[in-house]
Amino acid sequence: MGQHQRWLIAGLVAVTAGGLWLSPSAAFEQLERQLDIRPNNRTEGLSRDVADQFLRLGSQEAAAGNFDAAIAAWHRAIAIYDALGDSPSAGIAYDYIGLTYASRGRYTEAEDTLRRRLAVARDNADYRGQVYGLNNLGSVFVQRGYLNSALDTFQTALRIAEDVRDPNGIGLSLSNLGLVAQLQGNLADARKYYEAATNYRYRAGDLAGEANSSNNLGRVYRQLGEEGRALGAFLVARDAARRAGDVPNQLRALDGLMEIYRDRNEATQVRRFLDERIALTEAPETSASQRLATLVQLGQYYELTGEFLAAQEAYQAALGLARQIQDNPQAAFLANRLQAVSRQVR
Image 1 (tube, rainbow, N blue to C red):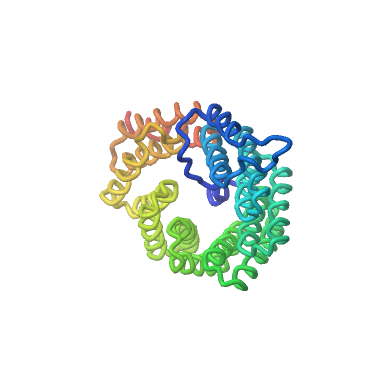
Image 2 (image 1 turned 90 degrees about the vertical axis):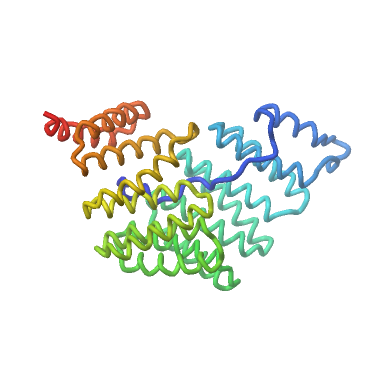
């Protein structure tokens, strides 16, 4: 799967971990004590609060890179939710487990987990659970390159979402259908799906979803040569992502805007959006890949303005970081840019 395809694929669902101020291992032990489940009293100590805390603990562990511990915490949450008869919440935990497996490249386990999640939703006539379970399963198919299977899965999700009149589910399913069409090179269908998805997500108040679909729509418009529409889509994505506090989609929108204005040689506008990107990625917790992307954008800006020594410095810093995180394609790109810029410096 090419680089232009990989950025399209949504990653692991972001979950806010809160309420647990202990270290992950200490929090896990404390939750175990709170459960206090004894052989002769199997339900004593079970509570929705504890299950919810296990769910959040899993998110905390995943954010720290402790994926096995995260999966273990989510399984504990499932056991409690099952005992409480709360199948929808158990389904959410299955989703997290399945998506975590997928993010680690453990696709067979991801599919098995998400199929189990679907079975639970079907057994309990949980139609919304089916919609989201199908979309997550389809996303795994996309990551594996099984686009026809993904297409069938997303179409099934869309039918169910339409039957139960779930605008969030409709928007999500349409957006994923747009993704498949885009990856297959069917830009006309991709445009149609993304435009409809953006409208549904706007109407549903799903700001993060609207930002994601608008970003993808902007890319399709760019591929179709419709720069004005692309500019509008990226601006919508930037605004929705900012209001949602969705930094990854905000950065994607800013990158799209900078590409357009760089192609137009409008350095002032590029600098405007570059400054926004710098502000968003200067925090210590920013991922190395996003810091790298900012350095690359900075180098490209200096090339545009003819400040080749500054461009060289930005690219050198970016190359060091690319090698550090073993981003070989980006390192190769940066080596080429450095060679070109060095000729200008002389």
